[in-house]
Image (tube, rainbow, N blue to C red; front, side, top):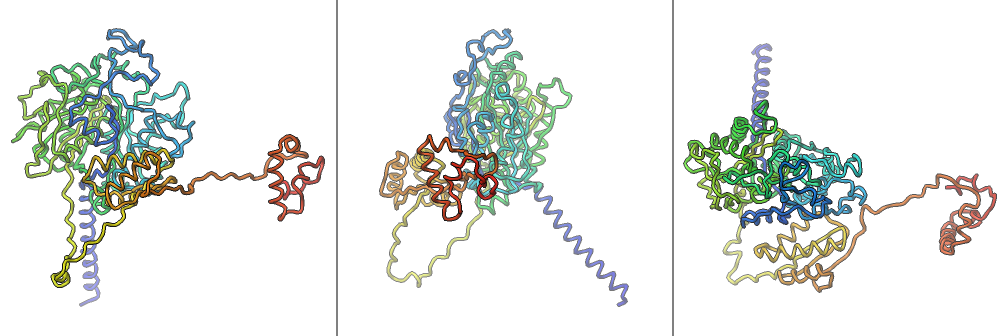
Length: 630
């Protein structure tokens, strides 16, 4: 073969190899672009005393209404604020809403924040910071382990009215710091941003976080939203627009719908690519199959909803999920309870999900329970839906006297959930859509799917018949189980013990050995420490109860470690010095004189001068000696 032919053959082989490499790389990119995103951790606080996803589920499963009168701890002038006459400008004709218990409570020391800085920090920042920590722990991730990680933060928030008149503008009241503070506190180095698209903010944050994960910008993401109504401005403004429900309740898609009811809340999700969640061994609560965001554009009003835009965002989310409308069982709707918005939303759902179905689409809204949490509303709907998938139940929507006659319910197959129903998988995974529409015109829709079945684990090989022998082998005694707890203060340690004891009592199926493993491997370790040791649940509970009460028990050990963040004081010696400095204090204060004497004794092996004599000299030459000055 000639040299020219050999060169051609070599070049062709190289080209074929390069083509195969490019094909594999392209397949990897395409696969990553459509890979489901796993929800591996959740946390939340919402009205009705809700402090966790479990408590949120209990509220909706029991059909409870979390709406209450205006809180008395906000400093609002309630007598002047409320006026039942909607024409009385500058007042609110509603005096009910959904409010967080202890919205201003915060432990600044836990996050190394000074009390002064905490005072001038928006409660929305504080709550989202706590929510991020709790969501990571729910995922079995030690928050301290993420320092330097390519982890992102995507936070939805729409109000910045805390303390501006009293404190001026500071980082604690800047919306960008809502997300930035989380990244700073945990040392995260992935993309971090605060999103304000009004009521759709938290669902847009979820969409952007999913894109960042699929695009390789981060390996883990925190996504959610927060709303705290520190002033009554939202009620006054919506009253002027006649958009409030007089009793503060959202009657989603009901004939009696008469306006929206504002509320508060915070919700946070921990997200990973599904393959990463599996390889990391994190719990997969549900997956995000697809999502989409769009805008109303030049529609029939700046803040008015737009049906065709809502249809488009739903269809785009389905296309991104590679699913059809018939693959979706239910929709957690925006459902604000307004006479304009609900019929438009229902029309868009009928046009998209309601056609060519064997079984009707089930429709509900959490806002009927807790009100409209605005920037925290979308993530609340996601949390509710994730737990509903796990429980196999679709909860009822409250306050529906009858489905609204402003909706043509005959135009498609949709059923309003006026009663709870079993959620059957029907031979495929449970799936649901979640909608959130901002009065800014930005719409978001997310497609959720229940968690996949765990990947099978190869069983441990059992001993052969010959290895077992003829006699029954002796059963090993149960090992001592250590439940290790830590906190930054003794009070917090007692509270942690109380919560753990409650959890073990309320969930008797929980194995103490599993709890012990999780406490040791997925929690940060702080200065105040205790270990409850026992071989059975009763013994462990007794030790935890003793710790919670601050008493001793035989199966309980307590101690404290030195903090790695203990303050260090350095007196450099630079500054002003003069003859007879401290002389007057030496003469007037025996305590000071005694300590100076102790210092002189400590210095004497190392210097050729006397500390007390130097300080007592009227015009000595010591000020010219650098070693003495320092």
